[in-house]
Length: 291
View 1 (cartoon, rainbow, N blue to C red):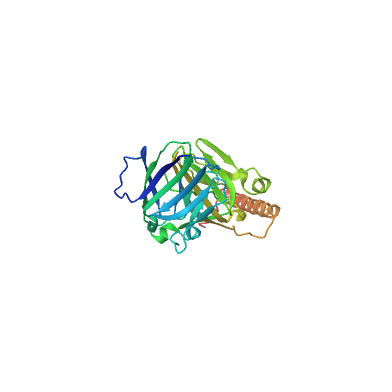
View 2: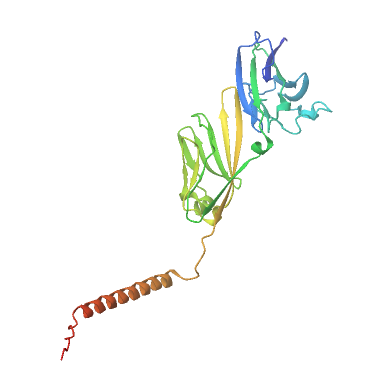
């Protein structure tokens, strides 16, 4: 029985490659720290064997019956370039490189052995843009007083196909998919912040109104940039601190009583001044005795 081999190449930083043997070329632009998923476009089954290579070194493999699965050093001892950054989808054989670095640049080749099929292939031109460690690990910090509103702005241009998911202390609280949005509905979220969350569909920003001390914590935005041939996952982090408003120690009734008392005293003083001035105006003018 004849075996057909489909070859799929992934190129980082645009090296010179012969693309005449592939159907099309796909350009991917990512930043250091992003996760990049390269899709195979197939479903694994017992008739397929999928192998990924990086610069001619095998880095991932999965058999159709899932009996042979490996990534990175498991596939080739002594190869530790990716250091647990490789994830293999058991359903499709797609490869994900998490927390990318420019050292991951190179040629990625995918071999798919399929029984009774025709050859096909793609080339991914992936550019990983370098950023500083400070920028890559940046946590934007926000500090507000209780009762004020705070806006967490990701500072990106949102595309219709992007999926944005907001997490608060690792709990999903809001999501934007296309023109649709969803605010968390579980009991815990409803009791804490559900009715005080708003989403900006143009920017993906999250607005928290009437903030409380319990809103303090870590907020994470996961942006999924989705394409038919690949996807990029980008994460932005925010730290929110809600500062307590000083408490006078008086109840609202006591405060109201003090206000009324001050107003009454002010009214009394005003009335006294008016009476005094009126009395002085109408006093008889003393007659001068020239005798």
